[in-house]
Image (cartoon, rainbow, N blue to C red; front, side, top):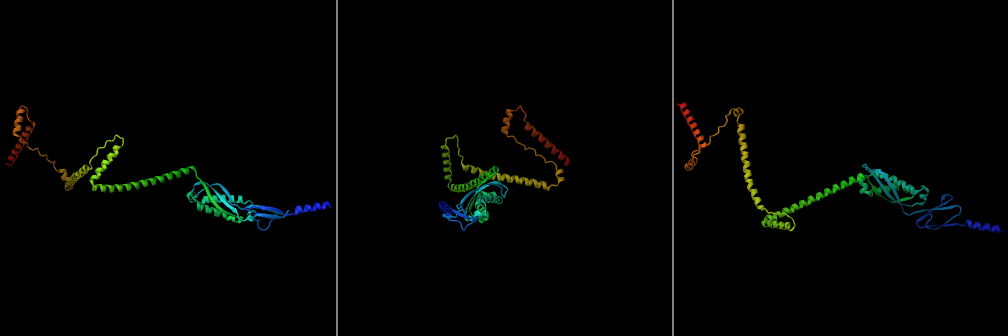
Length: 335
């Protein structure tokens, strides 16, 4: 009798249903003799049959999975290292347990291969400045196999792009050259605007000459206020203008005279034949004109230097004798 009562109590203890608690962010998948039993159990208390049912809890929260840095060559032949992060969640706990052995490991491997593929299809500028389309393309590549595993890819982002040191220096030089170009353009634009304003100021000062003088005095005051050894000697601008205007006619007349002389000499040489130029006698040099002595000066000179002969008078006398002899020979030949 005692043995029967003990067996009955033990059967009641062992055969009564077991209770399990499923939390709000979990879903319970029940396996009865190895088969999935109906839909996943919702949050709350659930009862399991002893010796036949087994429940596995599946987390349905969003999982943040970092993707290890992948090294690849971009489409413009630049070697880079890129890492990313994947946000996903389980939407079908049954597929996540039945269709794939370890869904987190599977998502990680697909993310690495997809990241390598994105690196090879993209250029360096897109990886650095235009990441949003790349993130969307990477999410689509991951979502394609994940749908069959009951997993939804919520978001994929490229986190960092590591460049070689040589490429960093090259990009730094490029950025520096671009900034220098923009600085030069801005400086040139400022000088252009300043020149226009100075031209307008010059027009105003030309209408009122006193304004230029006042400006000169103001400049002198500004320079004198500083402690320096500079000495300013103002030079009137009107004098420079006068010299400039007066030198122009003289230069033009001199240039015209030189041009006329060149044209006259070229015309004479062009009109003459080569034989005539060779046979032409050398031009005669006219004798110096006879200088008549002034009586008063001659008397004074004779009085002072009576003993010294005058070489100029002797030359003149010789020249007169030669002319007289030449005239005598011409008359004798004519007779």
